[in-house]
Length: 336
Image 1: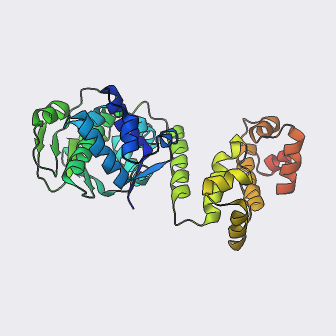
Image 2: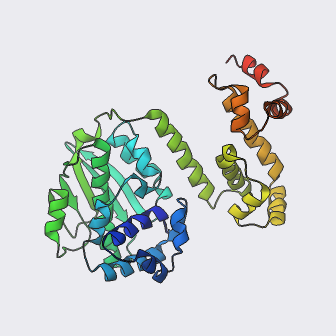
Image 3: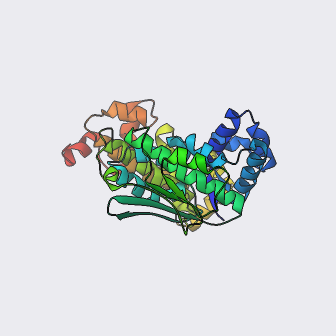
């Protein structure tokens, strides 16, 4: 079943709120729990999102809903992907990163691609077709939000597209398209796309932060792996523990609640997969404590507190049990 990140829902709620419409009532009518808005990693089935779009469209009475959502777009609209794109080396890397990890935001895209022909580089989007109203609003949002994000990334508010194509028929607000995109717009096309000057895609960003990019990318991968229903229970448990380890590693109750499995059932299933809660904690401890210990900027005391130990001596003994040597000996062995 296709699903969409709650961050997609948030930008719609922002637009409704800005126009004096009770977005909570719309969420309720669409069968979406408003508490999901507080959890960045939650998803909504596309069927409920379609219902929400229909409710919002009926109450807003403005056919430009998709464009309004695109105008209201900010980096957080695309979960972690927006921040990953902003810290990319250039626009080309930003788009490739978005394509690579798009499932953290939406699983309903059939095709996302970047095609360069001479001075035109075109971003192409093809989604699953549901109904004319939803398809049009979604297409409007995808392409208008792409332009908004490009403007944010390159820090140029007046950038215009070179050409835009839509799969849906012409609308009653064609002038709004031309005003927003600043270029010719074609309808009834075989795909949705937005084209920019190719030169724009390879310009280096002075604000790009490669370290932050790597950190965000690691978190994106972790979220995707954790949400992958094809992963073993052991792997999903491991990724959840490792993600929260530095905040005080999750106890068995936390883990079972996250995985929606009773503690006794969780222990049994982990055992069937040749693991246990205790073993996963040990593996996470070894991986994280090793990485921190090899950081020359950190002292043993700092590492101990980072890992939740009240006394450095407790960390010292735990490390020695795990590695058969003290943190200092470990550093010496690896010449840090």
